[in-house]
Image (cartoon, rainbow, N blue to C red; front, side, top):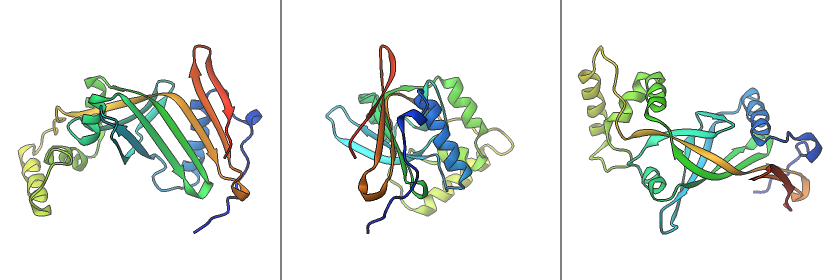
Length: 206
C-alpha cells in the first residue's frame, strides 16, 4: 500500500520565521481545500512512569501561546496530564501530503475560559459532557441514552452547567515540525525549535 507523494516542495526561504504563522498557512490551506475535520489531531500523553497513550481530539483554537483543546480532567488523558505536563500533537492532512508534529508543555486554562467555551457548544454536546464520566464503564448504550434524556429534563429551559471536571488545556510548543511528502520518499522536514533567542529552523533527513 504505497503512495507516491507529488505535492509541492518545502523550502526554507519560503516558510515564515514564526512557526505559528506557518501553521496558520497550512491549516487554512486544509480548510480551504475542503478537508474533513482539518482540526483533528492526535494527542499523545504519558503517565509519570512513561507509559504512553494516544487518541484523536479536536483543536479548538491556536495562537502564539499554543494549541487549545478541551476534555474531562478525570479521563485517562486528563489523569496523565495531571501526572506529566508534557504532550505531543500530530496533524495529518492526507490529500496535501502534509504532517505537523508539535511537542511542548501543557497547562490547564482558567475556569472562566472553559466556561465561556462550554456555553458556546451545541446543547447536545453540553448534555453529553454531563452524561457520564468520560471513559468510565457503562451498562449499555441504552443507559447512555436514558441519562441524556434525564439531563435534558433536569435542565429543561435552563443553561446546562459545565461539569466541574471539564477543562481546557493549552500545549505550549517548544518544537514544531512541518513534513511535506515528496517523490521517492525524499520528504521535506523543517523543524522549528524554541530557545532563548527565539525560533530556529533546521532541515532533517526524511
